[in-house]
Length: 515
Image (tube, rainbow, N blue to C red; front, top):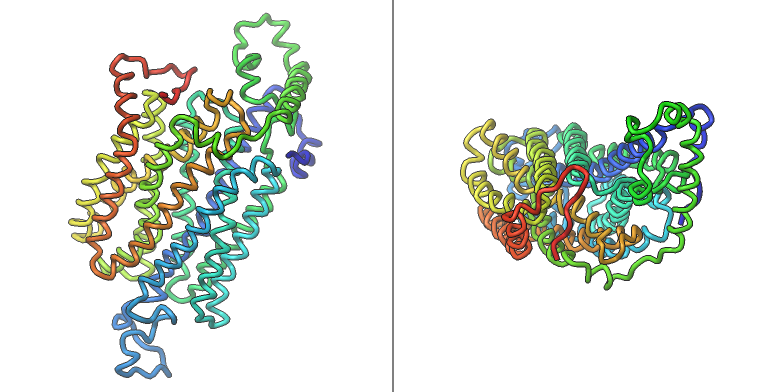
């Protein structure tokens, strides 16, 4: 469903004529706006991981303020925030993580189908607005002195539910505007929004966590709400909305701006005058085709070759990634004694590694066409890197940061590749005749399955960490191994293709998922 051009775009069109560059400008704007959107989504997920060290901490390292009476009952927990002031604090915090991501995962399966039937601009704008509201409510507990565990659970469930609007929405927008060429590289760079959001979230929340953890939630909530308003004003989810041909039509007809040397000089002079008329004609035809296409069902999407294998792999990969997302600052504080603020800033190194891993995985996938083989290689190296980080990460700060970057790259490389380039490729698979309306459903299935693992990982980490943090790392190593095994059959088939030198593609082509 499309409800016309965004208000901000209509306003800008009155003052600017884009001419032959209009498609490039719109593509760039979609990339930038969706990058900002999901950066804001992830920033609003980050505060709880940072605030855990303030909700429950080692009170013996702090000096009680005047008026606080310390006795045998309050000596160890006078600085904690009830109900997280008992020995089962990690378990309760793990439950908050789990209900948040479980709500996200359950709603994700429905979210993809809704995204295909609702204007993506409205969908993302409202999703970001409500994400800001529920993030704000969690921070409000600091000022209203709320200590009800049920309150925190309800806010987390609602917050996780509205977060599911983000991923299918942004991936569909980008998939609508871009073809298959260099998709791994484009998505590898674009997917950095996950880690930029984590970094900004850790920085903003970490700035306030030592003295006012309520602001650690309220400031990110204001940012995500404002970004949602920007999406409402400027996001163009489909080329047809602004009378541009889709990437499918462009690839068939040829983009007249791409080969100017093949045209006579008179044609080049007249090109700027005719390009808007031609693109408007192509866009109208494409809009009619888009309306006539039917969204595929859930079971039709599951039957697409590769969806099940990559979904299972993402289940285990996301289990590891989200365990780090929600528990890394807590672990760093326990392992190094750095304190809540310092551990928040130290955890940024893991997300820097995630950016590098996503880009490198995308480049390798583009040049080889072997996405499963790329993921298997990263996962195979991730297992020993986790062991080394657990064993030597507490030696000193420099060693810890270096190992975080390495682990971040190897853990998040496959996660980034599967959720972006692979999901988009499967969503436009030849078995469904490149039906762009399948993209949101396929993306939701893959990411929804991964999100179940994302919920399970932090929950188990909260339980296991009460015994030993070493067992948390053993759990993550086992999960990465399972992720590797899920893709092993597909990777072996891709390896056979590569052995025959048939998997290396030129820049004008993209990989096909091997059936």
